Image (tube, one colour):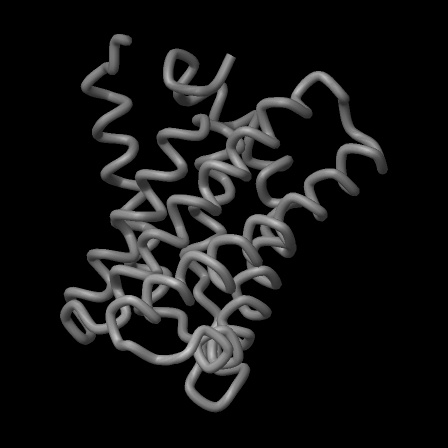
Length: 179
């Protein structure tokens, strides 16, 4: 497996964009929850540059965001959740690449976003927090419902952005864009 320097740099830029959008554009939706607009970057990277690039960008972006804002508090579960979200989305986008544009592809992508968010946030993030903080799973899942809803909403709204920016990404980075 050969990874180019440009792909590594592109992934680092994705992580920085994830962190920057998450820090600079905080849209409150629930009591202590904001829309994490960095998920738009993760979705576009998974769609245009593949599973690994999108997953690493989203995971490292969360780590940078957490280190800047509040240290390690909340980061392990969120980062592990992003690994799951990135893998599911990246693999789904790759598998549906030959479907062409249409309602079937949009329906599959929508289902993948909801399933990936539920698996990543409600399950993996919650379980990680159970292990770290010794709280009951039901309590952690109840608290993470807000994060799940907000993250899934951003990812769903990002789907048209993925479709739009893919052609530009392929032109600007032909070797790094998925094949």
